[in-house]
Length: 180
Image (cartoon, rainbow, N blue to C red; front, side):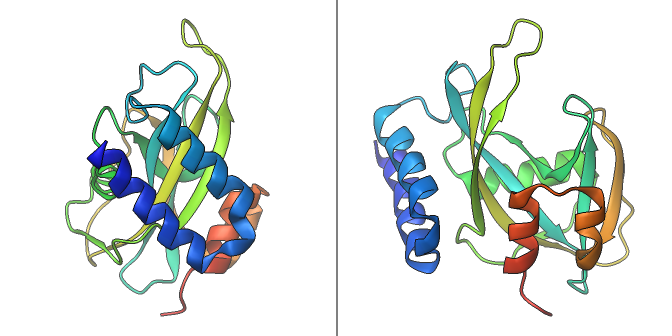
């Protein structure tokens, strides 16, 4: 319970900053409250995931991945695999999917929340990702490495994200990104 409470408190603070997202926030809070195993991928109905809105050192571009399984451009991120510190999940996923070693969590607060359906694939049924996204920044001078989870990686200027995707959650994160 304490691990779920920590996430629930982060979500409460997020709601104070973004009250207009109340419906999605309440849905996430109910999922956390009703599912003791919410951090485990084995929970068939869905699970909490952690993503990284990863800015370059200047804060003008974001690292996007062309996801192999979904075949769309999205932010870095993935499954918690039982880890309840979702900010650390976002950091781990950003490192694993980009090869970047020097990453910094800009703030320990949740940057964005999105709940989205994941289609059935193979033996895995359709399910929901309750995605908690964190703002990260990469140190300069590092080379990116495409992982086996991606077709490609690209540093995309914030103003050009809409050319890759019309996904509302990506455009919402662009609007929330602080001007550096």
